Image 1 (cartoon, rainbow, N blue to C red):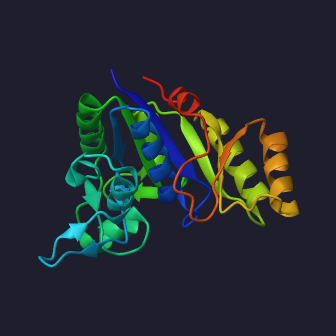
Image 2 (spheres, rainbow, N blue to C red):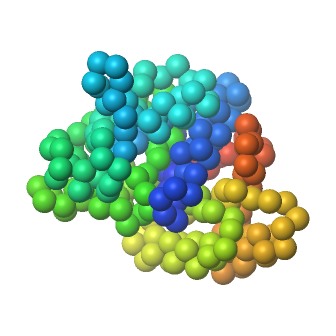
Length: 228
């Protein structure tokens, strides 16, 4: 049976996909059968034939070197760089929870470690008109625990603590925090790390610097975060 983990973030454009790529790469380098999944992906470009390419999935695949087929990584791909609920209103093809459940299960049947990345932050609306689906509904439906990715810079204490408290209130387990755009020795960022740990009771499991090509975290400890 596959083991799974959800990657969420404190918001959009904090480097969640980049960190996810490093995570999947670390698992692959450990010799694990690793895969990636994202339920809904917005802001994608078209290839020469006019087909939408799931950009985040392509980035993770390229970074990690996994051989998983690109089209199995995301069932809902939108062109407009807006929340999935609005993108589907503009483009059609709204997210259905049953489709997410089945396509995620299909990936889990083929790979031992499946890393699912969320869209935006945990409060991102995935569908609104045809059905009311929040990102947290998908996390609950798939029974996933999470890692929280946050920017290391100014304002992160507030966004980390608010996100963790919200997830706890909703019964969504959080395993730890990864700080992105980290500058070792920076007084504020080192203090942000300490305060995030102190105020949430969670460990900062890794700090990712600009241009890092590997995750500075023990591979066995990373794999242990995944649950059946």
